[in-house]
Amino acid sequence: MYVINTCSVTEIADKKCRQFIKKAIKQNPNAFVVVTGCYAQLKPLTIAEMEGVDLVLGSNEKFKIADYLGDLQKKAAGEVHAGKIMTNKEFFPSYSMGDRTRTFLKVQDGCDYFCSYCTIPLARGKSRNADIKTTVALAEKAASEGAREIILTGVNIGDFGKSTNENFFQLIQQLDAVDGVERFRISSIEPNLLTDEIIEFVAASKKFMPHFHIPLQSGSNKVLALMKRKYNRELFAHRVEKIKSLLPHAFIGVDVIVGVRGETSVHFNEALEFIQSWIYRNCMFLLIQNVPTQRL
Image 1 (spheres, rainbow, N blue to C red):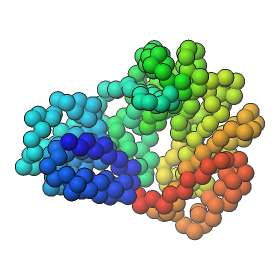
Image 2 (cartoon, one colour):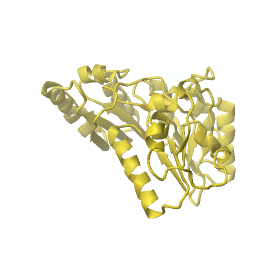
Image 3 (cartoon, helix red, strand yellow):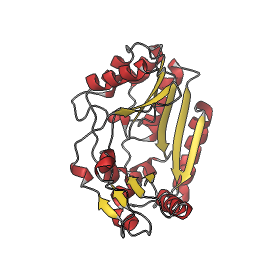
Image 4 (cartoon, one colour):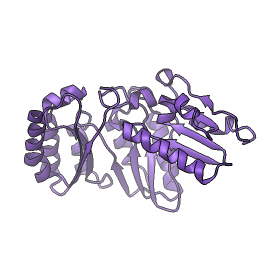
């Protein structure tokens, strides 16, 4: 049996998923093949039509995989179970656990931003989360099972609390008091959601690591507007300045996208100038992607 959990951020991701599915089926034609995740949510019929695929489960249905397996006999055609994700309000909190002391704690799912290059809201639904009490209890449970470092993950973690009338700052304050955990690390967080009070809290905390991964996406304000991002490059620069003023040796990772439809050479050079003046001097890691967009 193969369970293939897919991504669908870009057209390249879709292509790689198809290649991996075909590779698995070629390797073992008799295996019962289940395809889940974002690509399965967005294009379930396309996947179901692939020879050898038995079951296609959407982003929500994958959490109930055992309910759909049946007798694990190969099917004549792929069976699809993918509901309307935009009306889904369920959140499934979880954390990873294996032979390591680093654990990934899922604190949030979904996204309400609808950036023009991204299909994630259509694949994962609206932003949602468990409440702080439940999330902290899960962190405590992970600590009791041996977790010493917890990385906070989600689709848009800075948006935590929208479905429970709380916020991300309140969450990290509560997590900082969890016994047994020596380190907390914030994964990717939007510049407009990385507030000064969060940066100040991390700087004062003995548990939260001086680590920030901040998606810039473009150093041109015109391209950021094309992307429908919720900030400008001046705000991004302020966030970097704030971090470096309090944590001179902080690790700052940055994502940049080039080749967005509507981007001109003038926009590209604006972005390049901004990156050269701000990113190279202040950040430790830069990831540049040329992304064939799906929705523009």
